Image 1 (spheres, rainbow, N blue to C red):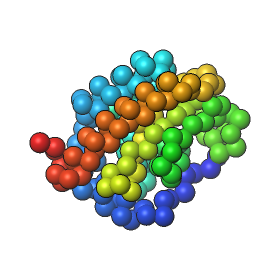
Image 2: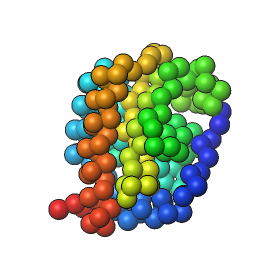
Image 3: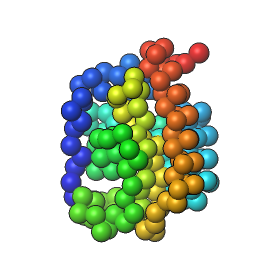
Image 4: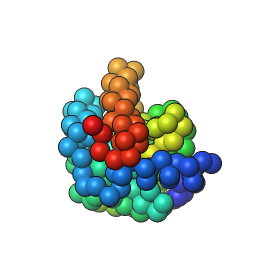
Length: 169
């Protein structure tokens, strides 16, 4: 298992995340709507909006996932925030970064992962809109486009939090 490396802009990214005030708030009903739509449209049992903090991944909205978060060292989303493009793992058991990850080998049995980085201020990926499945798969172009559209809505929402220093108006 490979823990996700830190982005080059980690300090500034962390400041942008803290500016949103979202780490101190509970789960978010607006983001929950986005996550539920993502799970339905993509026909997956699990979906979430996660934020990547210093040493943890915080689930701000989730479907099919019991835990409110997990250690960053185990996080697949921690890998998704490293670049601007969708991060897709068709079969986690065949990917050396994740094959021995407890999220893959343990009770969640994650096989498929797709995460769209949620970028604020044009450069700081605070987290990701993610979908997960217990079966290997890939996304067709239409489904990938739908997921990216939902991620754009989530990004706008997060940007409002960053701009307002907390709850958007």
